[in-house]
Image (cartoon, rainbow, N blue to C red):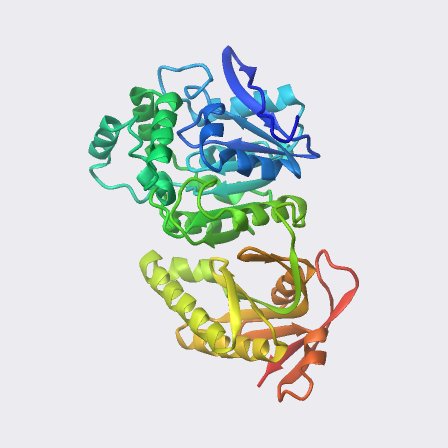
Length: 439
């Protein structure tokens, strides 16, 4: 397919139901986008950001989109389809396109089906990406059905854009396009059925059964699915990586998408290709921190108290990093990623932040490495980033662990280091000498 050519809609037969799908790119990896309750795979190319997002993914993967039964160009249904029926549709599409194993990219309500599919058919799922999702809607008010009736009255007017993509809600043309998208996606009656069914979905009990590598993405001010549900989702999936982004768009293809695209590419392929433009490469000291036993602590004190602690943690991080002339790249949910132009300041920042976090009852661990990083927009990549993360993984509670290159570069800075032995760092060649820092 030509770089500017739009994909052709095809159909897969799932039982006696025809499911519409499109394919963009030619691999070698497969990504299947599992949609939320709004979908029309042809008209979505008219929406700002959609096609560009898919084209970026298609530079390293074959991207498969579809309208689930009852939506868009797929066969209409009298009732909202069950999760089991939705799984059947995905398997049918995979069989038609010859995909033996794929990364599932679930969005919003599509996350629940993606989770169930990954736990049920792990041999067909290589990785799992959950964006703006939830395991159970714990945030719904008592008058939820009344709210649905009010929203259905406005269906087809573009009113949903204020919640789904507030970054574009002031653009009259974008709202008009979104209004048409609503009308083409599904009828008001079908939307009501979807909303009522989605409110009942609860896959929280099977989250521990997910064994495939999982990446959970969420925007901090998401107006559709609160970020707390995303944090909860990640905490219940073994070894899931959780990343929060600023902004409030629920739609994954609007707003600032560069950071999430880079994180998705790195998660799926193991590297960032740099296809979005020229990369700036600089030498930097990378700091990763992590709250020790965060999941257990959150369960022990409750969601509200834990959220307050995390807010205090994040504020401490911002203040401490700024004081040491560092750059806060992003929050990882229960930790931070930051960079420094001086390794001595990076180590002192890590020590200061660890001490301050301990005072508010949050034991942390930290890892640092100095090397060349790639800067793309607000995010970073490169081997140095992976190395710092792997160093942190060997750190003990209340410990700041550094690589040998850091100790070599801070000679004479008045810092002290204790040997912690030679280790293999996952995915990195050779053995690495690690040291515990102290002032």
